[in-house]
Length: 275
Length: 278
Image (tube, rainbow over all chains, first blue to last red; front, side, top):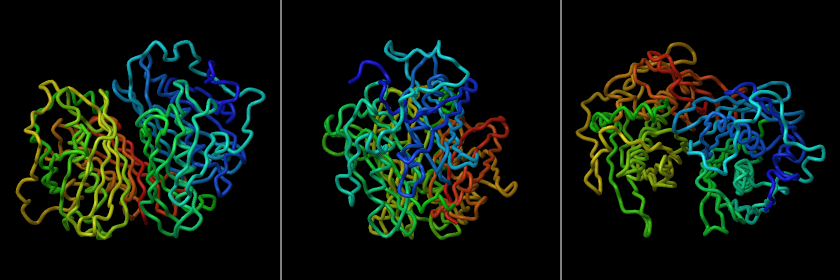
């Protein structure tokens, strides 16, 4: 594992995200929509958008919880439109900051400013540990980006993470936990977890009577960190009708006694490009 | 301050809130978990009563979410003992298209137990339809220590819903006292019978109001709800506003952002995303 975080080649740099911290309770972030992010229909895949949500939501929650620290409890994303070009904007706000939990709401819009979805995240508030990042000196307003001049995806997002489909019919995919997609705690970044679950549901949704569908909703509950890997998914299709597939996905860290690290409920629908 | 912190003010009467269980008719039993499993499991049974059904003929999402909240909440609370008890912080659930026959079996088990929170998985199956899956859900609760201490139960715990309600039993909308305020808003008073043991509006009632608001705004049937409880509803009336997210329409329905306010306290108390099949 790399000693500096994030390393030069890392998910948080190569997505070329940029941020504007508007105030203590509001941030805006942008992510270029590039072909490497594309789902089956050519629009940015839900897992990629969830990564954007995770980054802006985590930043907002960490600030709202100061001097305490946070642990991500869950992330939900509902899409009603597609991001196909330019960049997607995420506008996050602190919906609630209490003594035990922080809740973030993130609105997503496309390059024309049209709303394409809504996401929420909730975080448990934890006592600060000495190894938690200190945000007290970080800027509370202004523009920022972690991208380096050389940053950018060199392959599809799935390939960068290392996702391989093991058993399409059963929605089983596998992925290592690479430095490229680790978070500051050394485990798989929450957005990368969303991408793996997105890929598992996409695989499972391809089988059945639903026709061509893409992931539209992710409802993820984080139970434990995916530290070791390889991680593997276990998927069950709960409902499959024309244009709609609902899948329950569990993410297992096979290197950590097959611990279930995340559960997800994923809805795939007919492409939202025409919505 | 959120629902969790305000609820610390007291746990006045654990019988408060039994009205909600009585209305949905859920009977609860603590059962043994799988071998080696130390966390509690709770199984509930409830009839698919006609008064819980919506215009589509199926049991309404609000009633299903109330069952989920009741059974999952009890499971989380038992897991939090003896140090504390729980209050719901968020729930997510998907209803599947099943022609409900009943009885409905509600299973809750612990996915993660920490000092500050408990995550429970909750499924609802229709025993009258070959155990078909009706709801797949997750309930997250915050662990709190009430001023008078957590409730004392005889274990393993069994709770009866009590005697049947006298006929005619109100529909879910009537039970809430919900009335439309406009094309996208509904409002309900905060009746004492709808409070939970913490003395605040029962999470199932909040979820039911979200369901009613989404259905009122779309004319559809609520199938999917993500609900964050942000603050307790203490004063009332309680109002829910449902607005489509962007284009809103998808193959599985219209996706709405639903905001719940305690009008009397002048604050937002819950945020939900609901999908209603039109």
